[in-house]
Image (tube, rainbow over all chains, first blue to last red; front, side):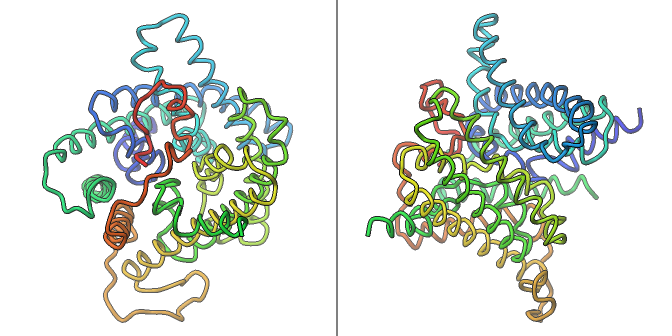
Length: 189
Length: 228
């Protein structure tokens, strides 16, 4: 139980995927313009991260390791993630159209999100058990969502500000992200 | 001189990091010192040239519907190769790059070039395009790494040259922390905007970073997600 709590705190706050590991920066910058879309993206990431780990972990432990093919893991993991995302998109479209219209649009964005591939590989590198891996993936997703939603709030506030011309757009967004990373550093002391 | 143009465009005019705003994750994560940045840049350039070469050769065979998985497998194979090479010959660099070496697979610059260029062009232009983009990426990484290392640790290229360059001031450690990464990149892009006297030209239509997995092209979303 102790280790689960440690995983939760570190995945959400101290070792936040976006602000201290620098994974998933593209959606962090891209989808944080509006609060509503940031929540949708966050939910989709939590879902895909958790399910991808549920597939990649057994595939690694019971297929690649016994066969001594661990060096193939990048290829296998990225294929599993790509196939899984495609599958979920198709099933969701057919079975749950309302959910698809709110979440589905974010799914294709996730295949090439480095946070998803990153979390599946970090679980292996850290030597987590199956349930620890699942917990780490889910909480990493929660951490991602937290930062995305907080940052969307910051950016909505910034809309009306008078910003120097050269800093408009991306530069000021990065500077704001820097200040946010600074505040998250407070958790690790 | 058409070939020359394909090569040179990636270095400044369409620099993948500073102008097209792609590949943000490695740009921010491994630029804590200039040596790491250089190593990452060279590794990515190798993968970029290799994947552009193979994808250009296979461009008439790969069906459009499954192009993304095909590209990713080609790229992942090259990444696995460079991972082995680096583990064997540059162990220190391998350790300090860590997971980010594997994550070259999902670097949107490489997928973007595969989708936007290599899948539509002949062998030689594709290789030159990959080489130019790779050098542009390495240049941006090296610039970031140098600024952050000099201000943040008070050294330059310490992982390659030891104490050759040591600066006599108190380093500002926050620059090699995550917060400093965002800050330095923001300012570099701002300075570039100022020098160009205008916003850098947006890539025509979509930069092809595939951060959206082609959703923009299919009309599932209306705004580009990478902010480019």
